[in-house]
Length: 216
Image (cartoon, rainbow, N blue to C red; front, side, top):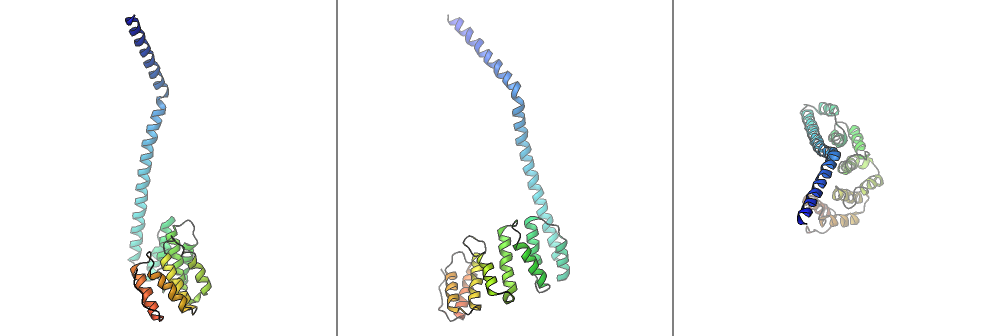
């Protein structure tokens, strides 16, 4: 009886193996596709990384070469000729706006272009808004500058502390020294503000006749 059972078990196991091999032969292509997909995906990712690195290096080399030009006009023309897309294009526009003494209107236009481009990183857009507000100065109404700064002074925004500083200066421009002192004093205690900004705020408070503050 035990021999019969052993024979039946062996036959059953053989049938199972035959079925397993048959299934493997039938569906082996799925496994091959999965392997090819994984390997191909990894290769594509590495290729993209290499392309991104090459573009970044090419952009950096082109910008460096442009900045070595002997005159501001030549530098500006060379920068305009640099090929760039996405955030690199935004960086290029900010660089073109870095010399307003040469062409103030062009600098403002470049900053406007960056600030209005929703596809760019928020760091670039907010920096453009901040830089433009400072550059236009009294040529733009206080209300317009305040509106622009309000948009980049919310918690979590990359240049929040610098925007708050500029808002305090607008209060001074409006003749509201007491409110400006309060705003600046809050900045001296703001943990997000740099040490240099806190020191600057403290100096302005003293200049306005306010009491000295202690850094937080």
